[in-house]
Length: 166
Image (tube, rainbow, N blue to C red; front, side, top):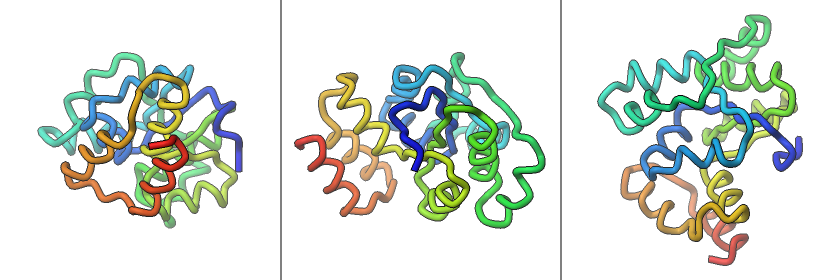
């Protein structure tokens, strides 16, 4: 697996962007990475198709993200394996040097791994932010996500909280 610690660019998928918006922590991406990219398809999923839903307004107001469309040759093999937004995020990560893809979906994470793409999820961002001193606790954010209807495997929650001493 690519070392996520040394990556300078993060490429976001819809789910984690919405989750970070729900807990008011989208700025963590800007603090933890030099460059934040959202694929065109993900931007549209969240801000256009998701208008009025959680995260849409917050993501639409981000001035520090770049919106990009990946090169077409990477998309064909990916779109049969994952949804269009995830495919664009993984495809961009394949073409952007020193990048990590921000994915929560288990299938998309497996596909990214098979393509040799570094990946991190919402809880990974919170873990990294706590270790960097940007937040003091993760558990309240996890509870807020759960109250908002976002499912997170209990084993993952336990592992992350244990790792950061909560």
